Image (cartoon, rainbow, N blue to C red):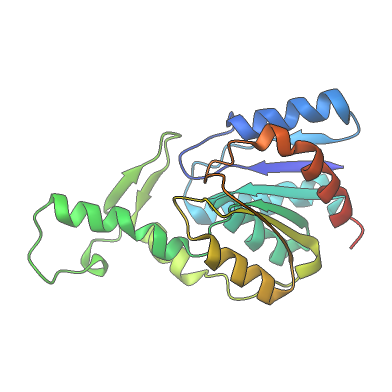
Length: 215
């Protein structure tokens, strides 16, 4: 089995969960190969990079995407495109909405005129730079708006772990979207957006990953 770990917004290839996943597999499941690409690029490049990696592995039926937060959004998008299975952790389902906070903050900091909207910012306007070095622009927000998640093409190939205590994203939105699409949703009480108990969850996660490959 091949696992491609897709990190979230302010993260990189050396994310805590990605490293924990790789080390756990090396110790307990040596038959599983873990890939941890750095995805601090414009969203169209991230999508192309991931779709190409799935194709290069050339074993789609034995490849599973593991996406956290914004990585969950990209995992869903790539699954729709390639048919690859995906396991999501507190996934973002509406980045075109949630990432607007950067545009909003910029307008406030610039003391913009009352009534000016985020859509008036230039396409190349820098809104935020992630810790991994992705320079987010207005054009990136438009890309997310043009590539909204409206349906799941392979719902039985997707499983979602959602923490009810997610303080950053609305867990109800993710739960409703994936349940309505027919995907497996595992709702867990408490917790946080970062999925701080990820290490303890790994046996259950690996079990769920193997189930996904049977669909």
